[in-house]
Length: 103
Image (cartoon, rainbow, N blue to C red; front, side, top):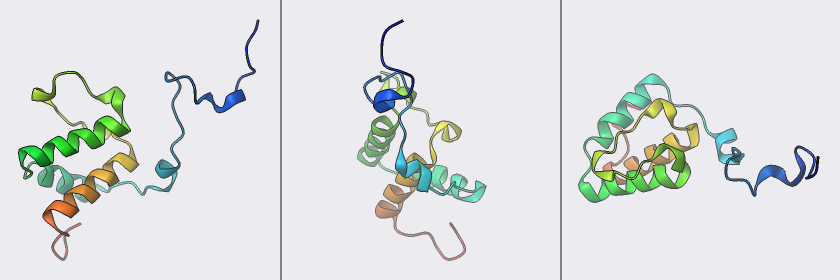
Protein backbone atom coordinates (compact mmCIF):
# COMPACT_ATOMS: atom_id res chain seq x y z
CA UNK A 1 0.00 0.00 0.00
CA UNK A 2 1.41 3.41 -0.88
CA UNK A 3 0.44 6.97 -0.16
CA UNK A 4 0.38 9.25 2.83
CA UNK A 5 -0.95 8.02 6.16
CA UNK A 6 -4.54 8.84 6.99
CA UNK A 7 -4.77 12.39 8.24
CA UNK A 8 -1.50 13.49 6.63
CA UNK A 9 -1.69 16.63 4.55
CA UNK A 10 -4.99 17.72 6.07
CA UNK A 11 -7.06 16.32 3.20
CA UNK A 12 -7.16 19.77 1.62
CA UNK A 13 -6.20 18.49 -1.83
CA UNK A 14 -9.05 15.99 -2.21
CA UNK A 15 -12.35 17.73 -3.06
CA UNK A 16 -14.24 14.55 -2.15
CA UNK A 17 -13.21 14.91 1.49
CA UNK A 18 -15.25 17.26 3.66
CA UNK A 19 -13.35 20.44 4.39
CA UNK A 20 -13.13 21.80 7.92
CA UNK A 21 -14.67 25.24 8.18
CA UNK A 22 -13.59 27.26 11.22
CA UNK A 23 -16.57 29.57 10.71
CA UNK A 24 -18.84 26.55 11.11
CA UNK A 25 -17.39 25.91 14.56
CA UNK A 26 -18.20 29.46 15.64
CA UNK A 27 -21.64 29.73 14.04
CA UNK A 28 -24.63 29.56 16.36
CA UNK A 29 -27.48 27.43 15.00
CA UNK A 30 -30.65 29.23 13.94
CA UNK A 31 -33.65 28.47 16.10
CA UNK A 32 -37.00 27.56 14.53
CA UNK A 33 -38.22 31.18 14.58
CA UNK A 34 -35.04 32.48 12.92
CA UNK A 35 -35.26 29.78 10.25
CA UNK A 36 -38.89 30.63 9.57
CA UNK A 37 -38.12 34.36 9.35
CA UNK A 38 -35.18 33.72 7.03
CA UNK A 39 -37.35 31.68 4.67
CA UNK A 40 -40.06 34.37 4.74
CA UNK A 41 -37.56 37.16 4.09
CA UNK A 42 -35.83 35.30 1.25
CA UNK A 43 -39.23 35.03 -0.44
CA UNK A 44 -39.47 38.84 -0.30
CA UNK A 45 -36.25 39.40 -2.25
CA UNK A 46 -36.03 40.63 -5.83
CA UNK A 47 -34.45 38.68 -8.70
CA UNK A 48 -30.96 40.18 -8.36
CA UNK A 49 -31.08 39.68 -4.60
CA UNK A 50 -32.14 36.05 -5.09
CA UNK A 51 -29.18 35.63 -7.42
CA UNK A 52 -26.95 36.70 -4.55
CA UNK A 53 -28.65 34.14 -2.25
CA UNK A 54 -27.89 31.44 -4.82
CA UNK A 55 -24.30 32.64 -5.07
CA UNK A 56 -23.87 32.48 -1.28
CA UNK A 57 -25.14 28.90 -1.21
CA UNK A 58 -23.11 27.83 -4.27
CA UNK A 59 -19.90 29.30 -2.92
CA UNK A 60 -20.29 27.73 0.52
CA UNK A 61 -21.94 24.42 -0.36
CA UNK A 62 -21.47 23.65 -4.05
CA UNK A 63 -22.60 20.04 -3.60
CA UNK A 64 -26.14 21.25 -2.86
CA UNK A 65 -26.63 23.10 -6.13
CA UNK A 66 -27.59 21.75 -9.54
CA UNK A 67 -27.14 23.15 -13.01
CA UNK A 68 -30.76 24.37 -13.28
CA UNK A 69 -30.90 27.77 -11.61
CA UNK A 70 -34.40 28.47 -12.96
CA UNK A 71 -35.80 26.01 -10.41
CA UNK A 72 -33.66 26.60 -7.36
CA UNK A 73 -35.13 25.25 -4.14
CA UNK A 74 -33.47 25.78 -0.78
CA UNK A 75 -33.61 23.00 1.80
CA UNK A 76 -32.66 24.95 4.91
CA UNK A 77 -32.09 21.74 6.86
CA UNK A 78 -29.22 20.77 4.54
CA UNK A 79 -27.43 24.11 4.91
CA UNK A 80 -24.62 24.49 7.41
CA UNK A 81 -24.91 26.89 10.33
CA UNK A 82 -22.39 29.25 8.79
CA UNK A 83 -24.23 29.29 5.43
CA UNK A 84 -27.51 30.05 7.17
CA UNK A 85 -25.87 32.86 9.14
CA UNK A 86 -24.35 34.26 5.93
CA UNK A 87 -27.79 34.22 4.31
CA UNK A 88 -29.31 35.85 7.39
CA UNK A 89 -26.63 38.55 7.32
CA UNK A 90 -27.25 39.24 3.62
CA UNK A 91 -31.02 39.40 4.06
CA UNK A 92 -30.62 41.82 6.97
CA UNK A 93 -28.30 44.00 4.89
CA UNK A 94 -30.99 44.21 2.20
CA UNK A 95 -34.19 44.36 4.21
CA UNK A 96 -32.87 45.91 7.40
CA UNK A 97 -32.80 44.52 10.92
CA UNK A 98 -35.81 42.59 12.22
CA UNK A 99 -38.53 44.46 14.04
CA UNK A 100 -38.40 44.33 17.85
CA UNK A 101 -39.57 40.95 19.09
CA UNK A 102 -38.73 39.31 15.74
CA UNK A 103 -35.46 37.45 15.16
